[in-house]
Image 1 (tube, rainbow, N blue to C red):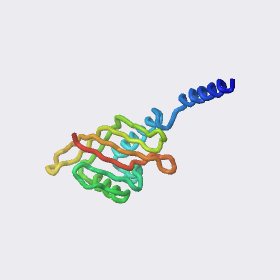
Image 2: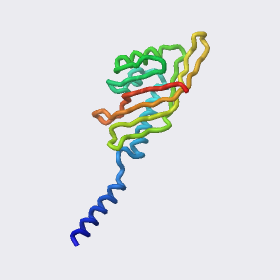
Image 3: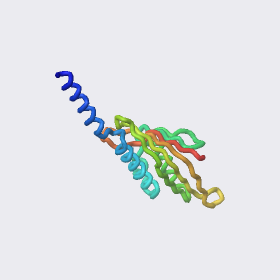
Image 4: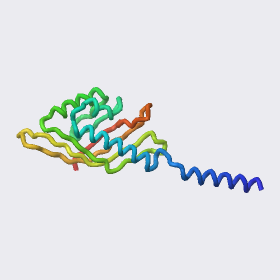
Length: 153
């Protein structure tokens, strides 16, 4: 009789536990995707270097196509300032997927991006690409981008 009661208890706990939502499920992924979308909105406006840079962690690494890695927030800030100063510069992106680890501490997003600027001849130029970002929760629970890489197909 005791064995049956213990088995019933274990089965009950497992059944209830399987209904609980973990940080790595769809809700966590949706929240990370929303965070990436919020960043895209701030970057698309392109007026706040501080706002754009705030989405990266202090130890972040940016890997632009055909250029050296940019490490740390100070170097990233300089990169963003130079980009925003480029005539005709605009950037936009849209995350097509977001995935969060089962412990809810790490995640990644992927999607497509578009960068526009005035070319050397003064004519508008547009580069379409794909990106992947790796995110980590900071001590306050906010998602911060720790690796940002993109390329052109």
